[in-house]
Amino acid sequence: MLRSAREASAARPFGGTSHGRMACPAPSKMAARLVVRLVDRAAGPGGALPRPLTRLAFPAGPRRRISGASPVLVELDERAGVAVVRLQQPPVNGLSLALLTELCLAVQKLEDRRACRGLVFTSAIPGIFSAGLDITEMCGRSEEHLGEFWRAVQQLWILLYGSRLATVAAINGSSPAGGCLVALSCDYRIMAENPKYSIGLNETRLGIVAPFWFKDSLLNTVGHRATERSLQLGLLYSPQEALKIGLVDELVPEEKILARAAEVMGQWLAIPDHARQLSKSTLRKQTLDHLLMHREADIQDFVRFISRDAIQKSLQKYMEMLKQKKA
Image (cartoon, rainbow, N blue to C red):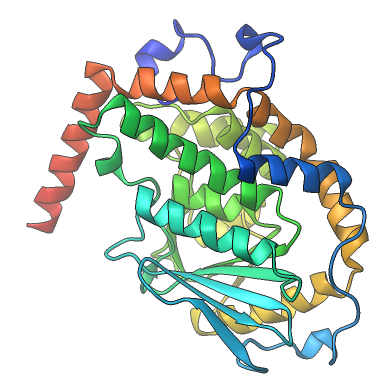
């Protein structure tokens, strides 16, 4: 998965043709349940809401807090059928194993609740949506830990990208690398109109390469040429630039981002659930299947390459640079 740019040309590609006809590995229970949903869900929970969806607002209606402990806060408005998930792991919502595990559990719980039809992702930390994968989870760790961490990254993407729920990313801060992937996994992206914020898959700036399913998520969103430039140059886009290439769908003032997310959610939930879900499955199934079929190989590739001395030295150097900035 992640490797130095120098090694990339000589190494076999992740999820490429070298995997050939590899049989699909036995998925986890969560992944298996997802596949069943993608293939068989022709009708879903939902139906008419008790009030016009265009008036949907998150403070309205009784809300149930499903999870309030750090690092994830989940609140479900059962009358509206919409949950708001706030990332709250200081200082930058780094995607640690703990945060990834909490997010996977939260999303799975919402998937299983008939009262929930939509999900909004946002951040509780000012100025940052998510800084991406937690470097400390990849630096100086055992192969067992690295495999567990990468499986959690995969699982979050699988759950979000194939969710039966309508999903909206309310990007109220910078969102590089893995944070950008979380936003890309959603159905619709709204970003705060603040020139200080940025978003993009910038892995090559660390001398490493985004895996094939990161690439596929971006390719399906912005097209081939923009993906080529983005991944080769490790570009981070301002909100205006992200809107121009289609990485985000619209920009709003930061203080209005959740209100606008509510309006957008109303538009998505006005569509009958079964039709929306089946359309989403049809469009995303091939991309999901690509990872599901090569999931174990992708984990092995990640562990092998991230464990290399060159990669570990690059990560350690980056961590030292971050420490110096904080000092």
